Length: 202
Image (tube, rainbow, N blue to C red; front, side, top):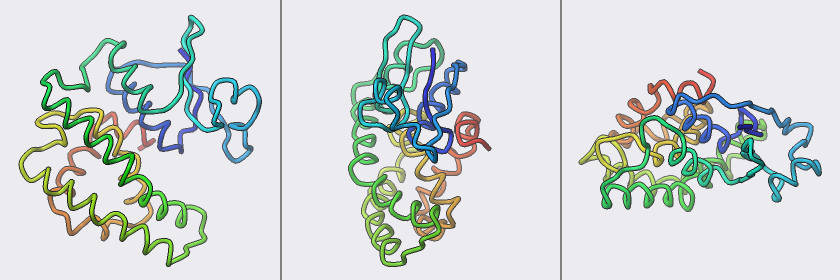
């Protein structure tokens, strides 16, 4: 099994997190984003949109999209399941994966990329912070009654949120999250998990 990705990529980190939870090692092939290796014909053949990651199995099966890869690995690799068996908990997990994709990661990355690139456009950063308010309110309300987004257990929902939260804190945005006490307590649990630390290179 080969994972074509970049360790700085949020989407690659989701897959690395699942692999760490499963205790499974793969051949990691670094795609240098600064050299635009993700746009080469060889990589486009694996990932037609020219981004990372892409997963390649020994039997020639290739797939892309980090959330799909994460679901596939969770279903096929031995180890603890990151998908709840209970239908309602499963629904909550999928719901919050949707929240991450539709409402959270966009504004989070608006902030992160301004900080990461050093452009620091305060108008864009302010828009990102404003965009995070509602999803953080929703997460905070959900986490008032349970330790994790889908219930009592760490699931793929946490896997999907973790890289964006990691970068927000790394880029000095703790004060953006701090008013949401339940989110802060949740993130303390999530960020100290060995798999999350490993996938973030901590």
